[in-house]
Length: 206
Image (cartoon, rainbow, N blue to C red):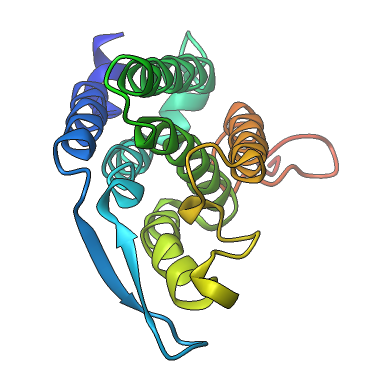
């Protein structure tokens, strides 16, 4: 267990989540100007939309630090531990966002929890099929691509730019839920890039 915590950087990931959720509430009015490439305006993206990238990037980095061969032969299933830890992080983010919305009257806490789930799901899928290096790049660029290419008429984000939707957007919530569900399934499926042979094994027999 201690080996898993160290390799996966679990304390750092949890700290990153707590700090990002706290900073989002503290700097609720901060924005990042992003040029809209398909229009003549600049989109002011809320910093709160971006902060969930911190724990997600830390988590993906931790996922890439392990030895795939050692993890396959470990007594306890590493994907099992990974899935449990991600479920715990998602629960933590949701609870913090709910408290910020209900007690603090700050709905962006819900959007941050939603974006954490969606970013994490997208990162897990990218890691599964492209490896941890590209996964970090994909997830770091995605919200900026949404701002640059996903702003429609009237300055409203299009349907696929779900990270920029308002906190109570049902479409964004569904998109995030689908992504995290698919990402968790991919994670529980095993190591990234593993391709089964016709005999059902990932390694060739001598």
